Image (cartoon, rainbow, N blue to C red; front, side):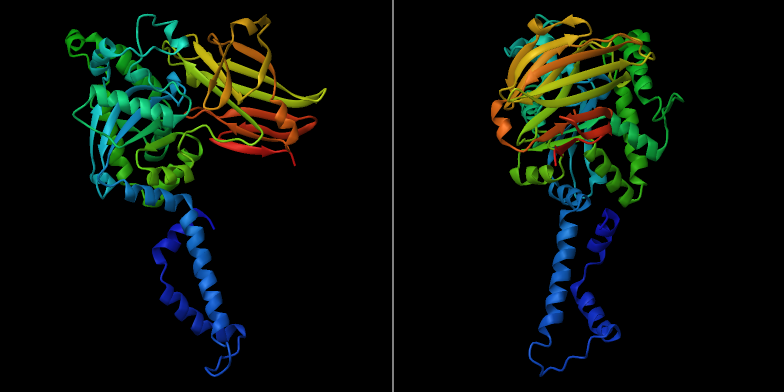
Length: 460
């Protein structure tokens, strides 16, 4: 049953009508008329009716559209912190949190009130004087004297961990407003929405569409705003967001409800919408929708490539990533070979993609070698544990028009040999599709474009 039919089932689900229809039609399909005195005569059709109702309910209740509607219903009267993750400036959970909004949800989502904060630095800079939390090592290399703060708080790859940290910093800097949930929207989700609703015109005549969204936003915020001397003292370069987003919301209101549900379902499947609630009941719905953004549990093998564009340049969407992963049994050990190729398209913003790559593997994996191009960088690789995984971290920078490949070889934990092989692969949230090839011994488990949040590959 597809999701459109599920919605129809919800809308027209009336058991009495189903029962009446059955009574009227059974005679036409060859079922003998049942006399009240016949033993068990009413029991069989009644069982069929109950089974039909149960299967219909089960199918509808497990559908993604139903879960989306249920989550929307249960978030009434809650305040939600919504972060706009800039996928062009990639960070571990999907993008840089350069701006955010607080949504006070109402019964009708479109009647809710929303407050935009387009310059979190104003409050964040105050926190820097009070915070003693150290920046993650890669960030520390660029900002030596800067401690951790709100805008850089989404370093943990697991979104629930980052969400808790973001919520804590929000409570410190914006104490007059408490929130009960954190939602992250990738800029890619807004680009896809513009494909549906069409272009939006700003007051200065600029047309913002799905093709130019990233470039227009960057030019308006990073360049044009600062041409006016008054703006240097006002220091609100992202006021364009306050104009653009309400217009996007107004156009979205006019979409058919089913179109909105289909759009949300698609974005969730691709890891472009994430959510974390303080309420555990709501988090269970989030997990069913597969939008928790947590690092998924794995039975045997696990792989996730996590990139962070540090020190700006907003070039992440110019990167195409090819992943070739092979597992072989060598002398009683499972040996993984990972080839990671990143190609930087030669187009705006014409800057180096300054990138820190982390490879998440099963806990206990042992690194043998990492080469970046022809250079052996094994000694400079950071090996840490995070979320019950062993993580290999290294700098992987590519210039405009450049293609570069990293070769990583490591041993998987010995206990994996005792299990039938399976791989849990998790794509980084807020990213474009990967080109993925997975091979176990001589068997290809997957080859092609991968644009889902995650998948489990079995060696059948």
